[in-house]
Amino acid sequence: MRPQRHLKRLHLQSPHASMLANFYARALGMTCHEVNGTWFCRHEGREVLVSEGQAGQLHYALFAIQNSAQWEEFTRATQDLPKANLAAYAELPHTAIGFMDPDQNRMVFVLESDLEEPHPSSSLTAKTASLPAAVSQHFALRTQQVDNMKRFYTEDLGFTLSDVVQDDSGQLKACFVRGNEMHHTLALFGAPVTCFDHQSFETPSWDELKNWADHMGRLRIEIVWGVGRHGPGNDVFFMVRDPDGNLAEISSEIEICTDSRPVGQWKHEERTLNLWGKAIMRS
Image 1 (cartoon, helix red, strand yellow):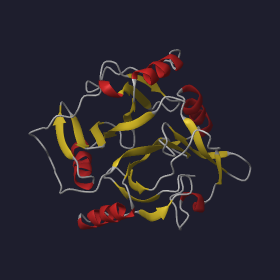
Image 2 (cartoon, rainbow, N blue to C red):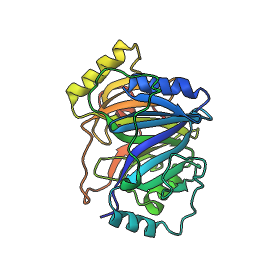
Image 3 (cartoon, rainbow, N blue to C red):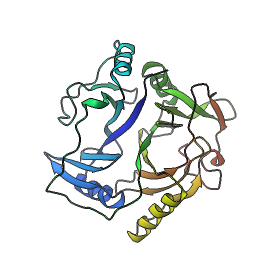
Image 4 (cartoon, helix red, strand yellow):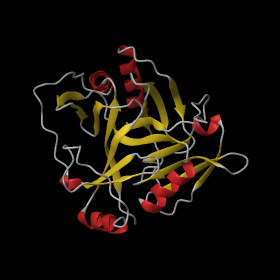
């Protein structure tokens, strides 16, 4: 079995970092505070960091590997890959290692026990009433070199390919890769631009999904896509947009995969991304 890795955190760039952080605090029910120019938005199971930079780009994505044996296996398998410089990110453990993908997105990995537990802060910018559970599940990138990105994540970093989306000529248009039993930890969409696409938070059931939608409604945050059901992953979902235009998704009922699951094949069409209707197509 390949080392299990779980998405723990996204560190987003924004030209309006405090505004973006406040959105995630309100919309996702997180507490939020600022330290040396970085905004930390956290709640149990979900974490978003924001600091200054270009809209629609990542500073890094952070994955945790569960135990020492799997960590040793992962570091051994990736020992010959060039390492990314993590010196600018003081919040990362010194044991963290990072890699740059072909689009220069920084992917960081750490042994779970090396992650510090968040400490309460006295400088919270927002705190909402109790909401249903929603844990960091996956994120997606748009890329102009989807084949190279697929190779990097599956062959170099050891993610497992779950599904591919191809056009009538057989050209790869999108793929979904997993780092654990959930159908995808990362989705890659072929597109005419290179940027961050969305992040997704998993909630346990339909009832919780409905409660999240009601929460967005009370805040007058428009649902821009959904409720729908994805083909790859079979999860029900809806999406909103943050102030920088990034999509944020609430998802439920995602497929749980076994090691022997064959790679799924999908057509490049709207119905693949939403079995119930309209879809946001990236290409």
